Image 1 (spheres, one colour):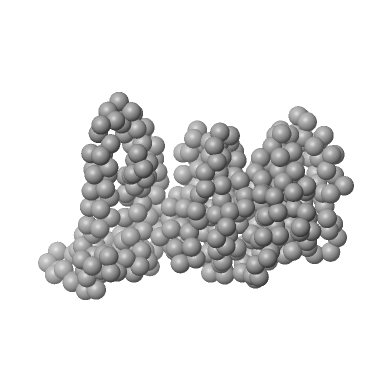
Image 2 (image 1 turned 45 degrees about the horizontal axis):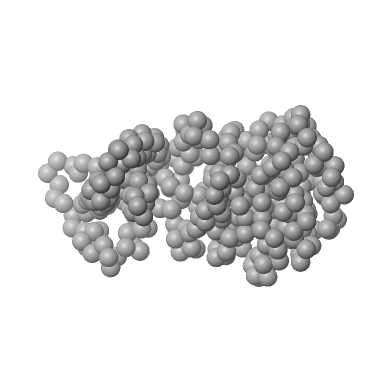
Amino acid sequence: MKLRGNPKLSIVTICYNNADGLAMTLDSTLRKQRDYSDYEQIVVDGGSSDATMDVIREYQDRIAWWCSEPDKGIYNAMNKGVEHANGEYLLFLNSGDIIMEGALAKIFANEFDEDIVYSDIYTTNGNERCLVKSPSREELTPAYLTINTLPHQATLIRRELHDAIGGYDESMKISAAPKFILDAVLGKKCTVRYLEMAYSLFDRSGISSDIKRLPDKLREWQYFMRPHFGDKVATAFYKAKIAETFVSRHVIEYISQHPEKIQSVRRLLDSVTYRIKHGLNAQQLKDLDSALRDGNSLLWNKQKGEKPQHDHAESRISNLEAEVASLKRSSAYRVGMLITWPARKLYRIFVSA
């Protein structure tokens, strides 16, 4: 393990009263990466009262820097870890998250110098493992970033980019990581690369996946989306995600009681999604594009007496299959994706039933 100099990668792991999770993480980073050594491990503990210190002592001769002291939250802890990191790239792997055996050698077998290098990821809730695909570079559009982010457990961030943005926003308690990605990709126009591989396992028992914290999480998302997408899109996101929790609960309950209705529910959700997402006329599409560019209120209603303008936007809507790539870059598509979030989420659940 290289403890001095400037290694290629710094792995930053934060922890609080999760000794078992920290043991799994450090086992994956410090014992199972035998074919790659150009990295360092940083551990930031929030002053745990369980057996966390025993785990740190077990690995301390291979940890480049560690501390155990109270902090001001998870993003304060992550920023603190970066202050002591020397790597060209940063990987945030919190206690309970792991990387696969030999993963670092496979990652750095690729040559890259982009600001952000991201991959697919496995997730687990303790019972089963699921592969979650990340978007390709072409799919990482503003439309995608209105409703998704990149998995920070499978995202390498150039240290210079982290410093240029000012680190993670510590006023955010749950969602500073997606805010960072949005500010980097849309604000800083940073360079990005997708590696089609999965090398890390995300433990979904953390605060960001806690359903009880969803309203707080969504309020933060709504806040940091505004500078990039305007009030209308930010509000649409918030309402759509809140609706998803209620709609999902009732529809899933209905399906469990009436399994013979699955096909009907599929058709209904598909119809609702198509109608809303693609039912925007040419004038509405033009107004949405203009409003989001200018940062003004959305202009849904044309001025009295004004004739509808039938331009290329109308042909895009009437020619969806041929123009889907163009439509995905439009403001209307972003808003439509937000409005139809609950229906689309449920459709994916039932499409394989």
